[in-house]
Length: 204
Ligand code: MN3
Image 1 (cartoon, helix red, strand yellow):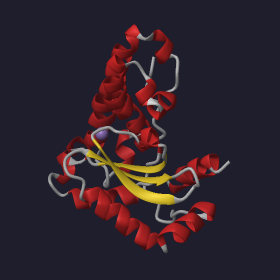
Image 2 (cartoon, rainbow, N blue to C red):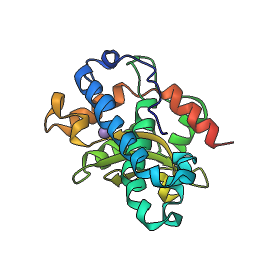
Image 3 (cartoon, rainbow, N blue to C red):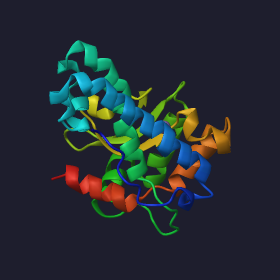
Image 4 (cartoon, rainbow, N blue to C red):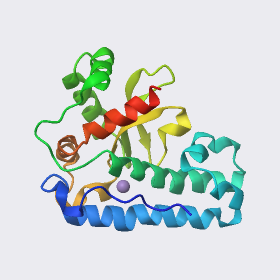
């Protein structure tokens, strides 16, 4: 059974950037529903239910055809939200990328500000529902990409480092149609320490 990882913070601890009510709904209802629907779809495939979600998403095309769409949509939704809730946390004034991650961002984007602008512009411009990502490719080159719906960068052979959910359920209660304000708020709650840990892991 796929279950939601425990959050490392309370629903209200990301205020005022991410409001508690949105966090409650986003985790307790939306994320939980992806997990429930994935589990339900996999009841007929007990061998697949034993695999990790990352394994399933990395090779969706090799799965039995009947399960490909549920894995892509519900499995993607489950994994994307696991990742998103893991790389955010309470705002800290002092925290920006450091160490090797900061070096890689400067190497591949020129500066942190360039990276932030590209990430924000591409994420704000997604048509409809989707996700903005900072990813590393197989050569550990960093880039910004976007996916539609609940598609996962893992399916594209990319390793996620940062994820911003721009489905309306992620921001509408507080930000209504102001997606750009929500993406700016997202930058205030990124847990760069955690992103650096993930970067170190994929680098080894
Ligand atoms: Mn969401």
